[in-house]
Length: 213
Ligand SMILES: O=C(O)CCC(=O)C(=O)O
Ligand SMILES: [Fe+2]
Image (cartoon, rainbow, N blue to C red):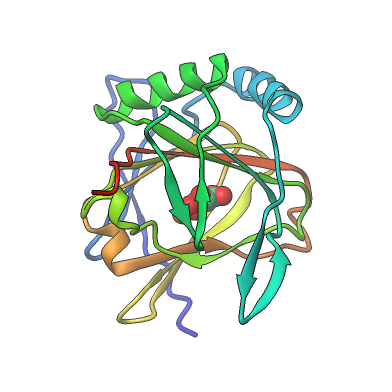
């Protein structure tokens, strides 16, 4: 497999304190803000969300077999943000107050509206997420997805659907990754199991889903 590293372009504005990197991936638009939340704020959110969110471990059918997904997850959103994922129809839970605040912060940062979030809880290094694109029709052709990471840094992989080129980036505690433009049309993303990055990690992908017609 081609493991070429695509460089990060530092697009930080020196007049602002915040660092931002643009991932130099073809036919994609991905921005990475490593220190979006302070360490302390991110830690407080992490402890709160682990304790308060309604984590579940659903099963999906893979090659005719029922299997528990290798992580915990929870779907929150506005009442009309129903979502179908691996043939599971997910009814959103009503917004938790601190999750709604985090959504608002993402909306301001991305200048976009979100009405739902998929929360993922990777309990240890053996939890993972398979390669996929967030390209469900309900998300539209060029979805903006804001991905907030808390806890253990885990290596996140992008793989170009056509060229198979891969790109890996460590998603750090308190970071924000924004995927937009044609990213979902040309790239898959996912997270392998890890033998070294073994601590717990939470990830939140804020999205805007439209009702199926
Ligand atoms: O855990 C992550 O960083 C990615 C999650 C993801 O890709 C998703 O929720 O669709
Ligand atoms: Fe995804």
